[in-house]
Image 1 (cartoon, rainbow, N blue to C red):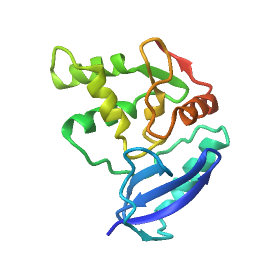
Image 2: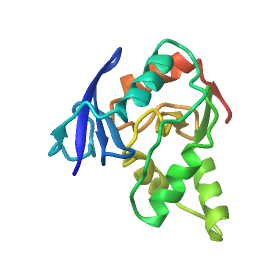
Image 3: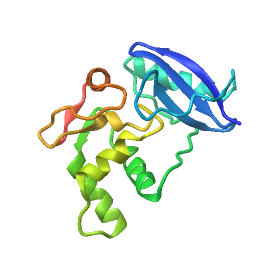
Image 4: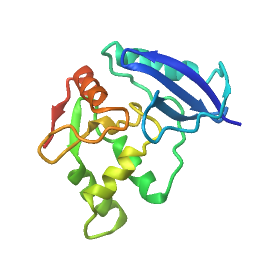
Length: 164
């Protein structure tokens, strides 16, 4: 069974999803590629650490833990999402840099930055799996399923420094 709860962030409402054991989704309301809304409402205890993580993050702190999460997707998407978790707080990388890492990790000569962008855009656990830290080749803000204005605000919270 899929459970859900609501979190009111400074950037708008967010839906949290759980299979009853781990966080399976965290999306802004109205976000593209959002997790299915067919879930039983729950005050599942799992959401307590997620709320704590989000409270720390939105207050400008750096959470020192990751709530229990489970990502589910194709092997390609899983590799991209794993690499997203390696982007340090306050840093950014480009889609091209991420594509190089995916290619290296999978033994390919090269990987399309557009393909990586598609996987980044379908990340089911916003903010905690930091897809907002991926920027265009020139450092511009591109492609965020929750809206570019939110991506900009998230990077402002982190006072992100570009690594390009």
